Length: 169
Image (tube, rainbow, N blue to C red):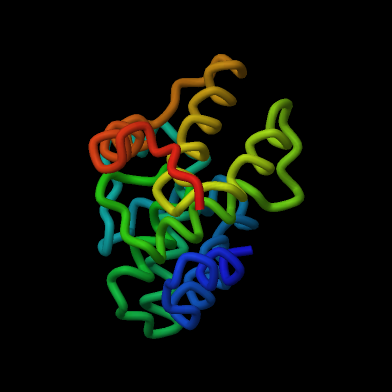
């Protein structure tokens, strides 16, 4: 899905493919292993807030491992990997493609995901990322979980960049 979006939005396919292939590298690791590894991340060091959101640790660890194990040095690719779970303000195109594609993947089955998937197809890159950020915030709020501030900050940034981000393609 990342490559499809990259093609549609005119983003470098090779860079998006690399980020997409490595973005969940650490996701299968047990939480006790992730807990140890995330403390050793140096590329994008964990914040205090990150410590409270264990569901995002795999992104930070995956970016570190992409760098250390596979020699990835492209900062935009590493950012895409690290911040795909939350998004972030000023996210660059490779990151947006992975962020949106990760949200749309077929294994996502929470209530309300299908209308968002359908709507993303008619949006430009910023509009699609905005829908994803809104969807993530809504989903977490409905589950009674506190969203990461990076997701809220990304939504605010997108609003400042593109009005309400509802440009049609």
